[in-house]
Length: 395
Image (cartoon, rainbow, N blue to C red):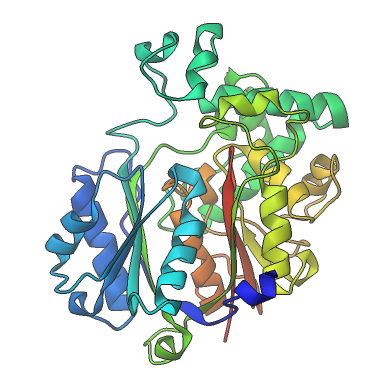
């Protein structure tokens, strides 16, 4: 069966978006954050909690479907879905919601991610239990005795390899951080709204996992984001312009490695992410290519992740990511403006859901760094080892 047979091009849309504030200490529970973002998204869609009949969550979220349904006052929940871990989930979550709508399992599906990622569980921090084999129930534990404990370390190794193979420089990575910071400086809701960043600031910042410095790392964040997915027909009656879901792709590359992330170092090459396979499927399903994308929200847990995805999604050739970003291609007015809210590096890190929200803003024309005439927006959720991505477009 071909992708065309499976296609649900433009049959569903995101009709509502909502976020909380992004902070270092919310003072609220994960459930409270989820409720606040969800209510905002439901209202933005012109609906009430009683209109929601489906909920899709990330399987790392501490808020369960029934918790949120009860707190919101959802009367008749007919569909519940879970999708993958952390950063690989958001685009796939939207895709699952759309599939549920098309299958007739629900009419209006709420998709959310909520976490106290700074004041609560800090995903970038290792623990004493990770220093030995046994008890973690994942292949990643076999790397722990050798000192590989955090995401920052694995992406540092990938960055070193890219530098060795292709001549990528630290100033290339800096350009990604600087570009995201400039977008955050234009966004009053961004955590780094009032904090400028210069090349000297970047180069003088401390190394955390060489060659990655402080500003190559995303912001640990307390916050939540939510969207409402419904049919394109119903979305036309929404009070705000809907964003059509052109295509969604989810999966891994050939011969995927086991574990959460560390075993990817055993691949023949570590400079190509699962993003490549995800991108190929996405473009095929959308009937579009890189040249058709007006703006992109790249998953930026680390600066090197953006550079790799620019290559894997076809905006530049493999190995040319460094010169590409340093040319200004990812800035406003460039070939492919990116992360227009400030991204994970300078806005807030809600495991990719904030990128989905910002993509809708671009399609609506309401972003704080609006790309003129933007009609197509790529969103990626492609760190390691699987991934997902979607393309949104205007009516």
